[in-house]
Image (tube, rainbow, N blue to C red; front, side, top):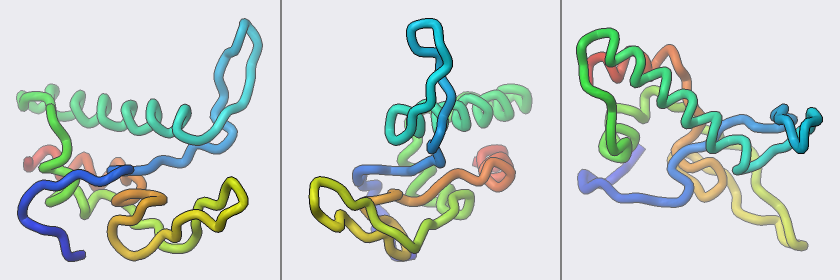
Length: 119
């Protein structure tokens, strides 16, 4: 995937599966989806990756963009088919590499674990 050597930032950086994410709302179970669920899901992946690094005597990851837009690409699943329709439009299309629907892709914990141990 062609990415510039300079670390840039695009929105979104990454994505996560988040349909039918179970929460407790006003004391009762409820299902949500979208950014409200995918952001904490990805944050959970980062917490687990930091735990792997700390157990190996390494520091926490800190700012993720240099990792994500370089070696981290190998630990992300590029989501190619689809789009994000809404408001009467077809939305943006997902495509090979970064796209405005799924960013760089979804995390693959096993691959990211190996990458962050070497980073």
